[in-house]
Length: 148
Image 1 (cartoon, rainbow, N blue to C red):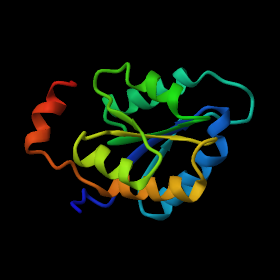
Image 2: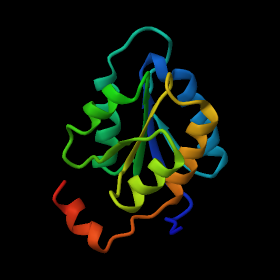
Image 3: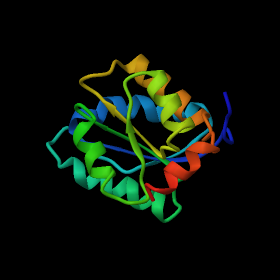
Image 4: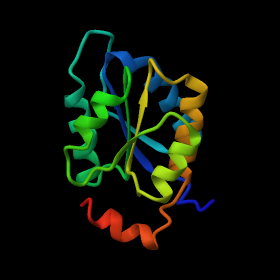
C-alpha cells in the first residue's frame, strides 16, 4: 500500500450525533502525530450538519488542513453537504476496503463516518487506512480531474 506523508493537518467536525466518535478519532489522530483542527460541534445540543461540512470544506480549500474527517449519525447527510463543494471528494466509508479505495482510486480528501452505523473500532481502522493511503494516480487521475 502506498502511503502519504505520515503527518498531516486534518480538519474534523461532526454534528451532535457524531460528537463522541469525533472525540475518539481526534484523540487517535493526535496520538498518531497528526495535527487536528477541530471545528466542532461543542456539545450534545441539536445542530445542522451542513454547517460543519461547510467548515471542513473551507479549511481544506484555504489550506488550513490537507484533508478532513466528518461524522454524523449515518454519514449520509454530512457527506451530501460536503460534496456540494467542488474541491471536496468526501467518501462515506463503512470498512477499511472502502477507506483504502476511496484514497487509491478516487483521491478522496474527506473521510465520512456514521456514528450510528459504524462501530468505533471500525471507524478508527478506517481513519488509519484513509490517512495513510496515497492516491494511486495513473488511469484514475483523469477520472478524478473530471470531478474537479
